[in-house]
Structures are given as structure tokens and as C-alpha cells.
Amino acid sequence: MKKIIIVSPHFPPSNLAAVHRSRLFAQHLPKFSWEPIILTVSEKYYEEELDYNLLSLLPKELRVIKTDAISTKPFRLIGDIGIRGFYHIYKSILNLTKTEKIDFLYIPIPSHFTALLGRLVYEKTGVKYGIDYIDPWVHQWPGTEKRFSKHWWSMKLGEWLEPIAVKNASLITGVAEGYYKDVFERNPHLKGKCIHIGMPYGGEKEDVKVLKTLNLQPYLFEKREGILDFVYGGAMLPKAFKPLEMIMKAISANRLAFDRIRIHFIGSGKSPNDADGYNIRDLAIKYKLWKTVFFEYPKRIPYLDVLTHLNVADGAFILGSTEPHYTPSKVYQAVLSEKPIFAILHSDSTACNVIESTAAGVVLKFAGLNDLNFIEENFQSCWNKYINFIKTYDIKNLDFSVFDQYSAYEVTKTLAKQLDKIKQ
Image: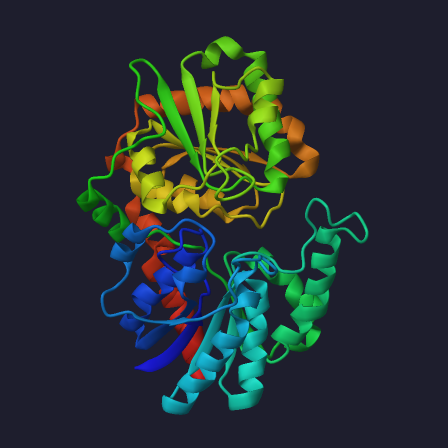
């Protein structure tokens, strides 16, 4: 077995979404002759609420090493776990390379700062490394256009640090090609030298099986006779607000058609732990849809709790971004929950093909920021199509053979193939 260290400062029982990327890779890598060693920060340094049910999703034989970090108590000088744990993680990697033969170092980001560990370790030990872009690093998002603002400085810091981090990388991956494509434009020396590939999150059937053994119950809403409930589970991206507003405008213009529809946004708040950090409430109030059609529970709830609420809902509501590269990981959860999906996605998002090829739902596709009116103009007809789809929906019609190519197993297989190329 070849050994791979996966640096994941947050890891179960952390309830942050990104932990599942490392978790799923670690679950399947041994099937391809790679032994994963998870290097994480001890949960006593986490700021988010913990979800110990997630530990039931981890392979019993998985090796997890936990390090110390700078605490945020009694004073929170630094928030980013990648910075707070950087030195301790670095020392742990070096100790492992001294006592064991380590074949590769793999660093999913964010935290983006941990990407710098790859080059430091490579120059010290010669161990090759790769960076996995769960999110882009150098990226313009709302606020970066304002010079000298916090967001602007964050982007500039990324522009400075990313070339340092990727300089000697042997592998660059991402949830989709668009997440890392510009890295090669900014660092042309990587072309022909560094392997790269896009790999989606992937779905894990075992998660659903484990969920059934826990007997969890929904607690955010109760089913009511004659009411159709739809669940949106996850963060609200800055560039998803415009598409959402077009949706609300369309619903507001045809309010009676949604008289017995409830759409629940779960964990979509401004901060993971803030129960009052509403993100979509103001928009819903503006279009007089608050707590009639749209409901929001801002605080992040455990991953398995989200699946529990999805299981009692009538369908999954998925909202994409104006950016073509964005691929919502919640698509895979929704398919595995066997609930009919209604999705509004950029036409270039790889999630469109996942939903359509598996016959798991209906997709309203738009062409980006300049095509927002298309959403408003076509939402009602697409929604009507979806309601009819629900009436005839049968999980027997889902093509899981197609979905298998998007499974966590297949995604990890793709990763292992790239690792083997580097090893050779």
C-alpha cells in the first residue's frame, strides 16, 4: 500500500461541508492500494458546533492524526483554522516523513493557506504534493471590487500566495475544471508539468444506509396535509441571490399557484452558528413570500439532519450560481435521497448532466448573469413541468447505472489513477 497524507484541518466531528471531500476520498482510497492518513486539527479548536453522528460515517480502520492549534479563546485574533493549525500540521507531516515512507501529500482547500504546506514539505523532504480546489482561491466575489476592503485584501493575498503554493505541485484537482482552470493561466510553467483533472464531490450510498440506523427525526418543520414541502440544504452563495430574486419575482406574479407550496432554506445563513443570520428573508419579505412560500433556518444543522429533513420533504430544491463552474454538492445528496429534484443552474454546470442523465428531476438552465430574465420568464412553465413530474415520479425510473459514474467510489478511482501516474 502506498501512503498518502490528506491534510484536512476540519474533519468529522466538524460539520462544515468541505469535510466530506476528504472523508469520501479516505473511505475509498484503500480499494486502489493507497492508504490514507488524515491529518487534522483537534476538534477542541473548532468554532462550529460538532456533529458526532458523522463519526459513524468514517471507516473504522481510518487513521486520523489530530494536532494542536492556536486557540480562539479567550481572544479571537485569528479565525482561519489553516493559519491557526499551520505550524502544528507542518511539524506532524515532517515527523511522519521521518518515521514512514510517505508517497504523496494531498491538500484540499479551503483553508487556502494550508496549500503552502505542499511546497514547504516538498522542498524539505522531496515528497510530491497536490492541491484540490473545493473552492477557487484567487477569485472575484462581491466586495472584492472595493479597493482596500477586507475582501479586496483577501483576493490580493491569494494572488500573492497561490503562485508560491502551486510552484512545485505534481497534481491539481478541483470539484470541476472551472475551479482551477485559471491557475494554469496565471502559472503557465505548470502546463505539461502538472497533472490536472476535475472531479465532482460524488454521492455515497453508505451515508443513506447509516442514516436509516440512527432513527433521526425532523424538527424544523412538520408535514401538513395538502402541503408540498421542498428542501434547499446548504450555504447561500453570493452569486446565487440574483437568480433567487428572479425566482421570487416569478412566484410573486403568480402567487395563487404556490398557495400550498413551502420551500425551506436550511443552513443558508450568513454565519454557520448564527440562528438569526437570515440571508434570504429580506428578499422574501420584499416579494411578500416570507413564511408563506419561503422559510429560512439560517443556522447550519448536521449533515445527517439535513438528509433527514430531505427524506420527509416532497422534493429537493437546488439553486445554482451565475458562475458556470459552480457544481452544488447537494445534487448528489438529493439523488441518493430518491427525492425528485427541481434545479435552477447555469447551463455549463456539470450538475445539469447529473440530474438529467439520471432522470432525477427537472432543470431550468440559464446562461449566466446576462440571462437572468430567462429565469423569470420561464420559471412558471418549468415549475409546472416539475409538479407533473412529481405526480408520475417513480424511483424505479432513476438510472442509477448512470449515477454510478458520479459515485464517491468512481471519483476516488479517478484520483487514484492520477496518483499512480505520478508515482510512476
